[in-house]
Image 1 (spheres, rainbow, N blue to C red):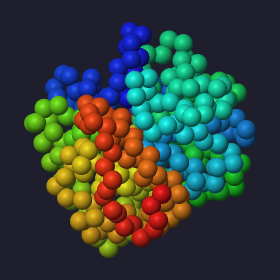
Image 2 (cartoon, helix red, strand yellow):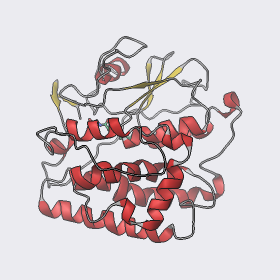
Image 3 (spheres, rainbow, N blue to C red):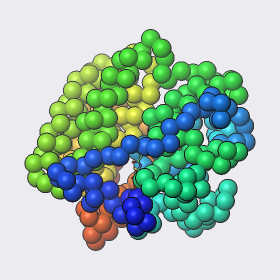
Length: 309
Ligand SMILES: N[C@@H](CCC(=O)N[C@@H](CS)C(=O)NCC(=O)O)C(=O)O
């Protein structure tokens, strides 16, 4: 994972993020505008989304884009799964707007003085030639309602009456599960790893209990809370269990979570945006500090009730 520091590239966020206390610290996203702001009106033929199919944060945006029928309004470019010394790359083809070969070129175009992390997703405004936003939690809210007038799709995955409950569960799931798996995987001290591991599995136990007899995390409908949990759960057994040492048990061993995961995977917006090839290639090949041989495991065989892509 790349970051420009003093003109030098630092890679693999675990290595440098963990120097201080052995714990993984995630940096804040720095482009935080929104659709509907004076400078970024909802329009056709104007916006572009850059994602990695491996990345759980970018995956949120792909699911919401699909659920909201935004495919024809917001084209997508996918980075190569291997994130190496110069960060995310557009390979074998450069990206279509400027012919750039690396994601850092987009950040540099948006801000010549940018020194932060070069992360995906990147929601790009072609007209303003800048990044609207690089924070997935905010991009999915824009997709949820920002383009409704153009698509006619008013499905609401962040409905007003459920917002406080969604926000609450999002915070808990983010700290302990979405980011929790990274805190396990990138810990560099035993205590930091064990603390993250215990918090992760306590949270999975709590969600397992919460899902008893229900199909969704909040209310009786699909909300962004489900999208945000899904992208971690679907990566858990093939990657986080082994690569990030989140190995008390698999999701397949937790009946309610497993049923829930399979139900979500059965929906095209989830299944068709899930690419196990990119997911496994990215994590095992890119994190040299965790897997220096870069061997990508062949297994495990996972039966989610549908074809694995
Ligand atoms: N808070 C951001 C996090 C995005 C993020 O960390 N993406 C990872 C890929 S999974 C990335 O691009 N990392 C590169 C880096 O941080 O150098 C979001 O949710 O959009």
